[in-house]
Every structure is written in C-alpha cells, then in structure tokens.
Image (tube, rainbow, N blue to C red; front, side, top):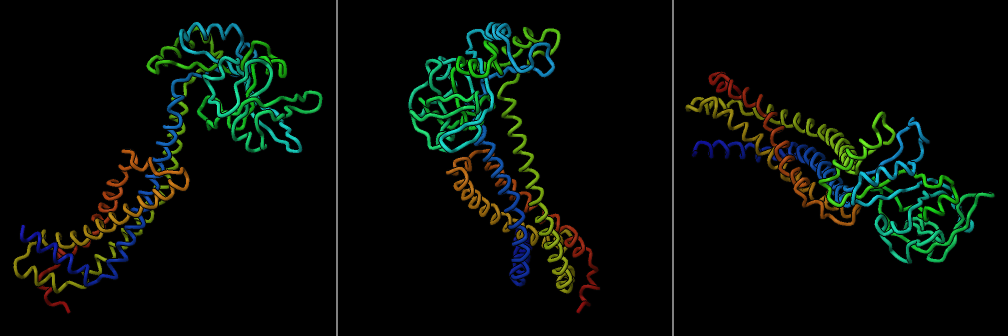
Length: 388
C-alpha cells in the first residue's frame, strides 16, 4: 500500500513538473468527454420530453384505409365503422375526417388542416382554451397557433376554399396547441362538425380514419387483434396501428441522431488519446535515467508500469470529471433556452451519461498509456543508467 502511494506520488510529481504539457492533454479529454456527454444528455432529455408529451396518447388506436383495398381507398365506410365499434366494446370510437384546404382571412392567405368530428366527441379529443365547442353544423374551432398566425379571436370569420367552393365560417372556440401526438395535429387546423365537413367535401358517413381511445392500455393489443380479425379477414382492408409505435419511431430517430452526433464527438477523444500517447512517450524518453535508478534499487517492472499508468489515469480522471461537469452546465443552459426548463436533466436515463462520460474518458486515457508504460518497464536498467 505504501509502495502504491509512492508510485502515485511519483506520477503526480511528473505531471506537475510538466504542467503545461499535461494541461493540454487534459483539455483534449475535456473536449471529447464534453462533446459525447452533452450530446447524450440532450438526446436523452429530448426523448424524455417527447415521451412525456405523448404519454397521454399512448392509449389510442388509429384505423385508416389500406391503399389498394377493394373499397374507396381514402375512406372508412359506415359498415366498417360499425365493425370497429363492435370490436372496441366500451372504449370510445371517434370517426374522423381530415383534409387540407386554402384559408383566407382578410388580405391574408394560407393553408390549414381541416378536421370533421361529431360534436359530442370534441371534448374527448381537444382541450378548449377559450370560447366553446361546436354543437351543430354552425361555427368552427381553431388551434391556438392558427389563431395567432391570423390574429383571430372568438367571433372572427374566415373563408375556407376558393372560388365557388369557398365557405365563410365563424370561429366559436380556440383549442390549446397539442403538437403532433400521432393522432391529430390541431395547432394549425380548423375543426368543424362532421355534418359541415360532409356538406363541404362530400362522402356522407364515410371517414378518413377512426380513432379508438382505450380506457385500459393493457387491452390495447386485444382490441387491435379484434379489429384486424373483423376487417382484414381475407386481405388487408385497413391499416391498424397504435400510438406506441409512433412513440417508438420518434424515440428511435432521436436516439440514432444522438448516437451519430456522439460518434462525431468521439473523434475529439481519439485526438485526445493521441495527445496523451505522445505525452507519455515523451515522459518515458525524458526519464530514462530515473527509470534506470528505480530498477537498480529493486523496483520491478510491474511497479514501473504502474507509475506511468497512474499518470494516464490522473489525466483521464481529471479531464473526464471536468468534462462531465461542464457538459451538465452547458446541457442545462441549452435545455432552459430550448425547452424553457431543465427538469429532464435529472431523469435517470439522462444522468446515466455522467458516469458513462467519465468511464469513456478514463478508459481512453488508460489505453493510451499502456504502450508507453510497457516500454518504460522494458528498458534495460544498465542502458538506462548510462543514458544522458
């Protein structure tokens, strides 16, 4: 134990004697660990944020027509809707029409998503911010982003469509922004009753898609199987997916991007490893006579290796710790600026990158010191003592 402490002190003394050189090697480790850890933390925080945003919609199933089916490929028929309702049991079934059309508000023109819903199903799918929901074919509600874009308030009128197909409607409600949950995106949308949608775009009692809201998420697979058996008996007439799949796709995409950026950041760690390798080799060349003296008084090869590995370990630990501390600070700042808060920084899936960064930085440093340490231990004591 005393010998280990002595060897550690020798390693520490040498790094202090060549402080500038050691500091440059540490900076390389700091940059590499900072890049990898920060990208990992930001990626994990974004995944946690997306999972939290979509957590309320993971209990939904969406049924849409399969391309190439025998019926109209753009619609769910009334008969198919009935089969879905039977399969869904006590769960809420929401037939939905969706499209895209031009919008005119005064001198402003643009485009927006158009949704058609049964009036009694508005509260189950939308969150009202002000005004009221549609209760008949009169009036529409719009997303908050849409209202802000066109400076709209309750009572404002907008024109949907153009020429002889144009229709003026009055806004009676504004719903909160929902982002895209894998079900509907109402931020830049106009939501009307299904009667209004049918009268404007046709297709009475036929729908673009059907949403099933599952009361108990444990039953989601059973309901999906039941719908599939009823509607896709001979061939795929409808496509059935639940929002868990959407969440998995989003998280997978974020994870792949984070991994790619982390790999780019890893290049700086390779540069740092080369720097440490160079520092250690220079240290061996400068201390040949010292090594010879240590060997002559009985120091064994493993102890010589230990001295140089301690040097690499100190460089790696110091650089890695500083790197992860800086990455936490920078990540918190970025999350605050982008998301308005750094609450996801404390998630276990995020904090795991702290020990990961330290282990990677320290491991790279130790690997870089293996060959120089082995070379130092392999020096012939007589030759080393005669060195100038």
